Image (cartoon, rainbow, N blue to C red):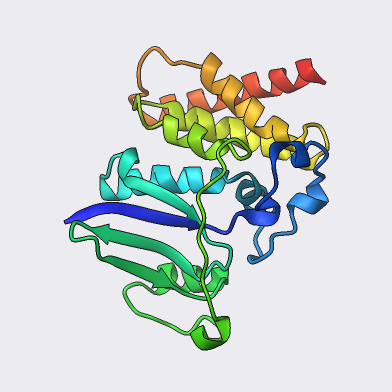
Length: 222
């Protein structure tokens, strides 16, 4: 009965910007998320939209839908967090305040509901909700993540490990903002395991090999 899942992205601090606008982005600017208060790493992932790419991977495995049936929309207000579209074209949306305490309380208290702290939504005061397509040219990380699901296998391990090294390097001032996607793309092109890992140990080995390769890539460009 489900036609597709739709995840929403705020667009981060650089919503509406073009690639040329992001050449000189600093960590301080990238960490200034307009809606959410989060840790440094996830804030940078939100700025690159890699966080939505990781959520697409999660949704694929949690709900068994192919990547082509999981969409992402930019929703600047961060009020609607996800939607389900059914075969009859109707939709159900999950709404809530833009506050991580709501999601954390939901996970910790499941299946109960507890009051996490933020005030309830006032939809009348909110007024309107807006949506837009993702600018994939400016924010390529989403498609890099989505592409790892097409061949199956261990590519998401490479994606995640390379991204963590890239974000840490950006925060340390050793890599440009646009370089995050460049490093991840290079790792995905270079590290192609001969066979999917068969154990947790093999997954961890692939993770470490990716991190080592990514650190060497950084050393070479610096």
